[in-house]
Length: 629
Image (tube, rainbow, N blue to C red; front, side, top):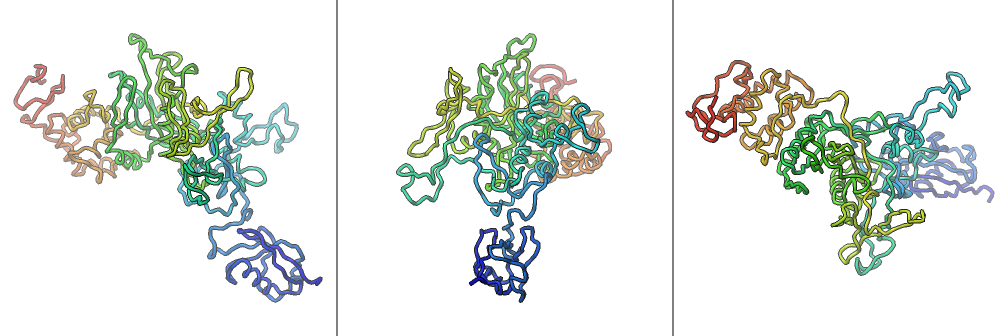
């Protein structure tokens, strides 16, 4: 009886106790392990140590000779052919420069819940954004120089006054100028995956406000509900991190052209921001959204409202932007009211006494963020949060136009996605959490505030101050302007027919006639012009403009010159000449590089004063009676 022993074997699926004897051979013991765990004889390996050292081979040596005693722990690893998705918890230690295959979670204050999930959980195959892949490989630590007054060690030593800080160090962020209220998302991930366990049992979980399906212990809602399928109540708190830390317009021209619509009509305007995500070096592991262009979709606008219409060109715009190396990074809208037209001031209406974002705008922002979710391999859903930003052009404290950037929290995204949040009709600064109905169960939503005695009190979110849902983001312009699109002339912006600014071949001919000294690459380096060339109904170039888009993306004049010699550009020039403009061919921009024939006098001509299209053979405009010349 003294020879009987029990050996513990740990695998990714758990631990089992294998009865054995001291005289039993390793081969016989491995057969018992295979039978107990349901493996083939060669579908696994057993090691003495957790780090895959000291493999126990199938041989005739007894367990006593292998120094395996009663109660010892052995470690089983499936072979790659039998189970490629199962990995032992601590088989590969994590370093500060590499993120684990599954990590991190957010607490209730950061809009998600932590759940105890083993590391063997197979995360979905998700292609993350390039900026996320880049930051995941960075060290991220904040290095400090030796303090001559506090440090008492040599040049190669380190102490608490000069040791590198973690990117999530709150004291460091609070002492920046200006202070940073929200750490970056990747710094938050480092915080969750740091420490001794390296975030071993933490996973990013998206909030769900819906009843879990598949519960068969009771009738479906509204006849029944249980704690297994009932969504948890939500307590709103300030989110500790943000997915984007800075918004930067490449130059003032982008914003000025967008504001021209309000200046000329007095109506508000909305547009989509196209650009790229880059590293924001002012904040550890920060992300910046750089805006290169604004696309204005079809919309009905008044002085107090905006209504988006169906956009048949949306897919084409996204496709062109992708070929230019851009993506949709956010949306922008105006909320401007002129105060004094003589000096050009606007009313300061969004402040702490009114609101920064209305509840309806928060819901719209949440809709857009859910539509453009952030790919994340650390979440079982394959996405977590969003990098989609909101920019408001409104009056500032100095009564000048200011650009304010925001995002809504992940909690707000969940409430909007599951249709649990409504705006208040008479109070734009208040939202309202829906009440449960026979058609939909809505979990309770709470927020904390202080009463008149200074005590923390929990309130039901009916109504709800939207400040609990907003994350502010600094919006800037660079000292040295940058230009992804280098054209100095202005091609008309799409969907501005109300201003008389139309995108047609007459406007294209006028645009080309103004580019007298620019290179061909500079002429076509205009986002709105490229959209017109692809989406116009007369001669769309969607299938043949790839070379030109590559030339604009890489600023390659040779590629642009090659495309200029194509039949498509020759046809474009001919169309421009037929509408009576002065296309670039008359200015030395012929398709073959040689001089071109002037426009025929028998073609219709456009009045230089009122742009009316006149019949051929007339010398005075039929509309304004001014001479043709």
